[in-house]
Every structure is written in structure tokens, then in C-alpha cells.
Image (cartoon, rainbow, N blue to C red; front, side, top):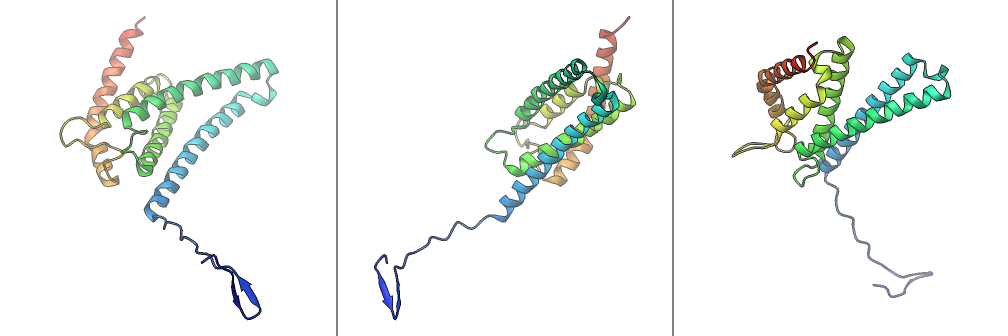
Length: 191
């Protein structure tokens, strides 16, 4: 190897190539699922902003009004990012046990939640599901985090079937949390 060889009129120096590591199909699939879920979440957010700009007549606003609008959107985006960081911390998103499947499940669930909040707020901005959406989501993420013996993390240790069963079992608890938040909200905002 590495020595000049001559075969007839052809001269060459042989070299060995190392075959690359075979790719794990499951890892590639998880990576693709995460990329798709992240992209869908991003598109949804961008679509909401585009719709809001259209409904508010952004293109016809003065430069000063556009600046105020952009600042308002930036502040809301920063608040959403702050809450999302909390949700991710509860979910163990950045932990060693949260692989791309776990992250994809989180991102997909985040998209479902964002759409539900959007619909709830569209119907009634004063509803607890709208007013306290972040607080409710944080409580749900805390409940999904592992606690105690035998507890499984919702995102990293449960498969899709287990997550569906978990959601069905949590429905009553979520309704209680919403009722408690609604009562507290009403008490805080009494005339």
C-alpha cells in the first residue's frame, strides 16, 4: 500500500479507504421528525404574525405605528420564548435522556398546544384557557416530568400509545387546574 504499482501502461499508487460508519436509520428518522416538528411550529408562529399584520393593516400603517407593532410582537415573542424555556426545562428537553424522538414529541405537542390556545383566544380572550395558557401549560409540563419510583418522563420514556393513555388519564386533573385558575383569576379581578 502506498507503493507505486505498474500494470502494463498504467501506473498507480493504491490506497485504502475507510468505509464510513453505517447510518442508523432510526436516528435519521428521529432527526427528520424533529426537523419537521420544529419547522411546523415555526411556520405556525410566522403565519400568526402574518395574519395579524394583515388584519391590523400593517402595510398601510405609518412607520411609527409599524415600529410600535414590531416592538409589541418582539415583546410577545420574547415572553413566549421565556415560557418555552421553562416548559423545556420541565420536560428535560436539554437532558441526556431526551434524544431527537423526545424533542420531536415535545415540539409536536407544543404545536398542538399553540393551536389550541389560538383557537381558545379567538373564541374568548377572557377565557381561562386563553388568559392563563402559559401557567396551565407549565403545570402540565411539571406533571409530565418524572417523579417518584417507576414514573416515566412523558417525552423521553413513553411511546405514542403511552402518551395518549396519559393524556386521557390527565383530562380530569387538567379540568380541575383550569377551574382553580379560573376561580383565582376571578377573585383577582373582582370589581
